Image 1 (spheres, one colour):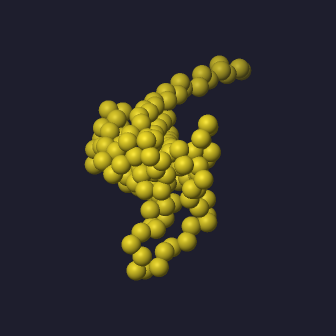
Image 2: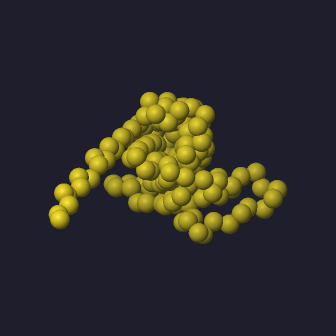
Image 3: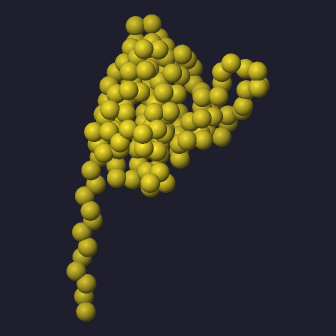
Length: 150
């Protein structure tokens, strides 16, 4: 008895890319547009996946605006959605100011005003990394396994 070959299911990858001004307003707009795009991809507003993405985009965009800003240069948001994973890339043009790598983060003193953002990214994302951006800059990538959020 021979079995018929099984066809693999097609994998649809959806992507969204947009540049934003390196300002607090640009960071807010990135979060709003990301949630709008995800809603259009059947990840509804207010769902656990949408709320997780909102926090990740907000933190990564705020970091790009605060620590990766170069006058006159934008930051870029890339969303990539497969049936299994949501990938969020935020890129800026300041390659020399790299955040600590995953596993190298240390908590700031309790009285510090900041320094907790990447700890939030590390807690929410299943994987994250700091990558070189060609031709210049860096990308901070966060990935979320959608199966754990359903």
